[in-house]
Length: 332
Ligand code: ACO
Image 1 (cartoon, rainbow, N blue to C red):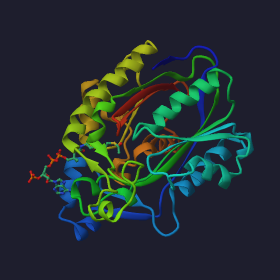
Image 2 (image 1 turned 120 degrees about the vertical axis):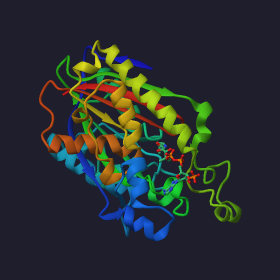
Image 3 (image 1 turned 180 degrees about the vertical axis):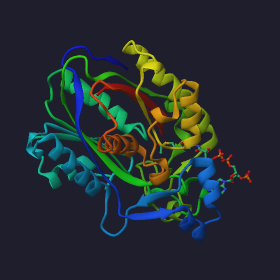
Image 4 (image 1 turned 90 degrees about the vertical axis):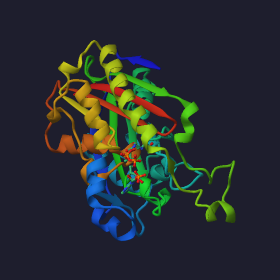
């Protein structure tokens, strides 16, 4: 789906983030599985990740991140008319995590829903939110990218366990001056490759039974090398497409915020696009792959570090389970 903004431009008004307290380093993982800090760092760029403990939950991280974004936007929760949580790890199967966040915040005037698009969830959400603003169907939108993957990662499977972390990033979207905000945004998917990254049981096809639990079917199964190859290609293609949609070139970009799944994927992609390392914003070393939370958390950190000047051109690109992928260009 192509979206090119002209009138009623939608933009990110403010950002916020929340991370679990507990830090798990690669050295901690060495204690519980056959892996090494050296392997993980060299093959992924990850040094540590945050993991929920005690009473931390996805919805609580969402709520914390949202409160910060709302305060920075100078809005109350009641000013929000649409609340979207992009996640693949809801607190519960039913109801949506968005409903739980709505209750916590008392965002009583908002319509709310969860959006499931793997690690591309935040960019899918941005695309959807942009439509509501452009069509005057919503004024203030709270979009949250949040995932708590640690409970669905098989801690006996070194192929996946070392990669993921938990976190939530929130943005408030509203109307901005024409010619700024979201300049272009595009969502892609290919359901024929659903089996490359999935959780076999726990849905209505295979509800929990003694057998599904015994066979560890409630954990993530991933074909890493296949996703790796796909990811490099689609990160480049989709970034170039959204740039072209708004008449820009990679040379005009100030920053790229890529999905933080593997630093080698990111390096291959940005070099092919002719970008310089200082244009690429990374925090994968500290957090690992937090799925839908990666991009909004990186965005929030960059805002806090004062990286963006008014008028900066920022591209965001992601890929994930589905398979899904997507990209967007923002003028800050
Ligand atoms: N520690 C030590 N050795 C390991 C580990 C580990 N944690 N994991 C795998 N290895 C070993 C393998 O067993 C293999 O050993 P062998 O050669 O003796 O068989 C060797 O390392 C190489 O394994 P590969 O799988 O070929 O390693 P690769 O370089 O491809 O890296 C990785 C694997 C990191 C998973 C990579 O393929 C990758 O990042 N893929 C993309 C995954 C991804 O992005 N997933 C997220 C999608 S987004 C979402 O929606 C959640």
